Image (tube, rainbow, N blue to C red; front, side, top):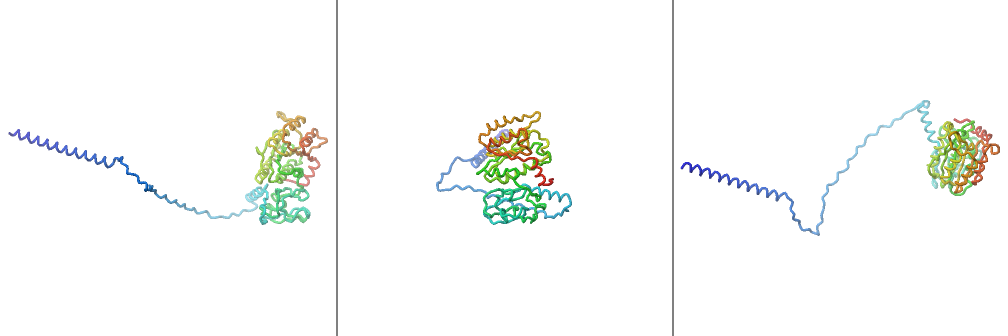
Length: 399
């Protein structure tokens, strides 16, 4: 009997445990169903309403952060002793920065002189007005300034002046205003009296009507700085004067040559203020010290390089005939040079030749330069030794 009671109790306990397990399992299954129903996406789509606009809610952009202004350091003044090297260097830099600068005139506006007026040493003349705004000062007798700094062009006597202006002199050589470094002249305050257009380049170019495409060929062989005749000085300054007198519709380029020839630019440049300033600075690179080692005079190559630029006028400045040195392939035969120029000058560029320290009658081979000018509808300007000495005396000592 006791065993039966024990078995019954054990069976009751098992049934109770099974019931608990079934209930627990049922709860777990129901909990899983609820979780699946709540968190898994449903494939049911709400019917679209055509009259409803969909609006996306965007967060407003953050306002830009204000930058804090840093306080500027206070201005300080420094006083320099004019005798100290630092002050002298500053003045020299100021003078150097003024070189090769040009006046620009804005037409049809009230004339205002912003800086000073310099009076040249020319005698009183009706040719030069009291204040010259017409930039057509071309005649040598109309001015004795060593540098012409205005471009030609039509003006009406009015205009805003950004630099200095020419004024009629009274024959006394008086000077008004505070120029760069003092003294008379317009360029750097140290200009000297002289006759403009000594090489006749400006007068020759003025003979052509309409726009011109001008290529200047400058001999920079060592002989250009020899014998104290300042041939390089004369050539460079004459080229600067000519460049500054080109019209706004003209174009220009520069070819320098000795053993070889090299163009300043790969293409023709418009004759505007930027190109002119570039040309003037480029010419300043050629000094007597810098050309001492240049041997040979390669005229043919210089002219060939010039012709590749398709100019209408070529200005050739040289003090010698074609010469070669050991190891160089420079053409020196006059007949060969003339024949090649006839073949390559297909666009009939006019050639103007300036012969420095050359005697056309006595110098051997000088006929080449004459033939270059004559066969290509140009002219030749001969500057002999006596005239070069005269120019040196007129200019006086130079630095």
